[in-house]
Length: 527
Image (cartoon, rainbow, N blue to C red; front, side, top):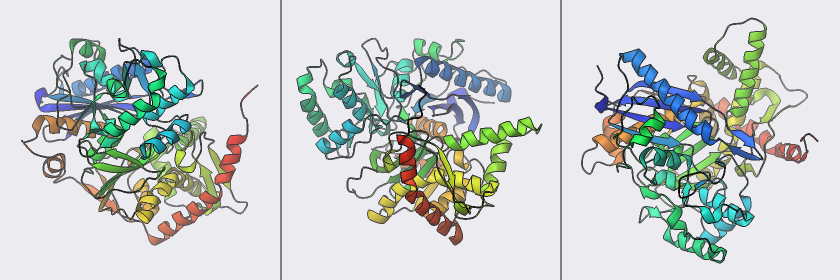
């Protein structure tokens, strides 16, 4: 039997899947639901429509309800707490009535280069192209008509949270991807707010920057409750009841750190799915690097983030192609079996992929300086074109750009890392992604048995912390002592030949970057 008041729900809007998970008081997943979706490239903007967002949320929650009913014979009508997480950054301004003023411009867009560079110079702090403040300033530079009507500057998680609770707030980790955070005040950096307002004063907008930013909250604080209107928006059947407390909305970086117990200094995690990113919690400050983002943990600790726009999208396209071929020849194999079969082939390949090289850039990639992507597969004339080498190339190219960014932290800044955890779709097949990531970073990589739950599980843990923490109990203490004390995990260190093979692959990868640059310059658009 389940006491629903002793459960929490985490719901995360990922790049290719919306997923919800129900977790009990022992922090064990009880049920889950999901909904697959894809971003759209509309008028040169990577986006999800408002209909996509709301329909996807409702379908995902209905899937969770169905799983609870099927497994436990009860209807999901309430919970002890709930929280919303989503892909970070991006741009979703709304008016005074809460209606979007533009399409949702996701993290994947690389259209804010001018603004990001100017703000980096102004703030003396690296501002990535993905960040909300870069999107806002680029819209100002472009003279977009909607700017005077902005009432709220949202991320996706902030937008959904307000729709459900009526509260315009952001968890500090999510907020740190909108505008830099002051480590002392644990709030937006006032010096930078003042500098931005001075920069844009001549425009005469009826708002100041702080007016349109969500209130910044720390993990453990209550961020409102589900309203009657929010309950019906989430569950149009009317079964799920209003009044459920909500944790602060967080980004997928913060939930990934939480899900892997990587919120203390000298810990780190790699999230690998549609995009991939590494998060290393710092002991000391580092220099300004355009390849390194500075964000925070959900409780406000400084984090160095290496974010790559592209990871598994091109790989997924190839897997779908092989699935189509299997169907054509009458082979019955489900998607999970196909992924496992193909991933395991990679371990049979040559350590350096046998002369195969490629770029998985479906979109632009700021770390290597590209504003557009052209997925490419190349090989030397004497390459060993085998299925194993092909799959290994797909996986290594998914990690190559991440490795380029991580080298700045480990080699240049000498940042120490005691633990590195992997989570996300790349690690669902046992051993494979874990071993190849270890080869990339030349360090042991651990994967917990809950790694497949990923972000929604991390969001659920943040809800649990808000609901069940003791007085003065910190988030690292809660996770170490109550969630992960007896957690099962596997740790793998790559063989020396795999480490050398990745280095050889990456050397060729770097040399081949001009090929991708040339491909971007080719105008492939139809007349």
